[in-house]
Image (tube, rainbow, N blue to C red; front, side, top):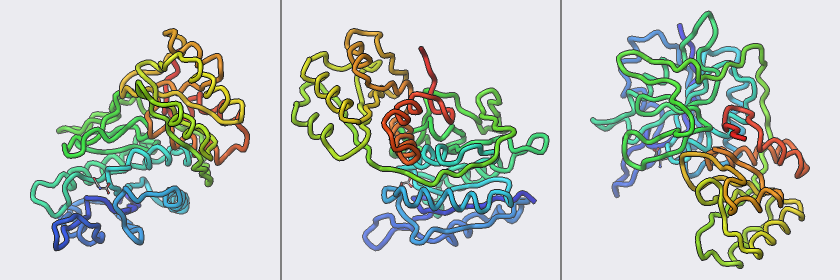
Length: 339
Ligand code: ASP
């Protein structure tokens, strides 16, 4: 038997429509009743349902920490883990779990669906059955997948490289800066070269997150007051979403404000508003000044990975320097260094 531990957090997959037609979360029985094929498989499933089950827009760092504890407590007894989760914040959860669970040697796969499992045209059944097959796949006695992933629409993505790309297509996720890990057609096609291999490592569960993070999304015409409001807010780090390959205005007042915040102990992380490609500090004059004042390079990290990696690093380290050092390093396959 292949033993899989399922964590049911909620999401569309198990929702039903209430009297006014709004989708609300429902219990795991609904999912089980709609998967009669399970009885023909050799999976031994244990299900842990969250209480309450939620729409993933209500996800919190506390729930993330509870989830990692559940995985650690059951780690030795199962071949893999399947987390059923709403798609809206799935990429944040996948990213943060990748940081909190160091040295994973078993698959942790998140999946959900765009249509509830009770609907005729649902994508839920395919997603669950494919996720279970990948979560139990072994090679020479070892799990093939040794990382946190998202399975959606016949594709397995690295979790901390993915984002929700479409609000209504079955193809809800993409990871343009990293290859798809598995494509499910008639056969499951594993991209072995792209997979993490944590051979020899022990699972280490990190159990602190610090949410003092803010976002500064730039646009032409953004006012000094808006920028000041974000930089002066009570946070330790700011994710700054810049233009193209990491560019910003070269106005002196702007660079002065950033430098002032950095000198006061804040980290400013530069990631691009583009969904594909990477920050390249110094490629243009419009990013050269950023490097010299100590703005940090987020390379090709997704927004979701940037936010959750900062929460994780700030939970681990009290000082500005350590967070600044590690944010620019590839720690779980979340970024590609290009300089
Ligand atoms: N609003 C839902 C959620 O994220 C959407 C979904 O499940 O796909 O929980």
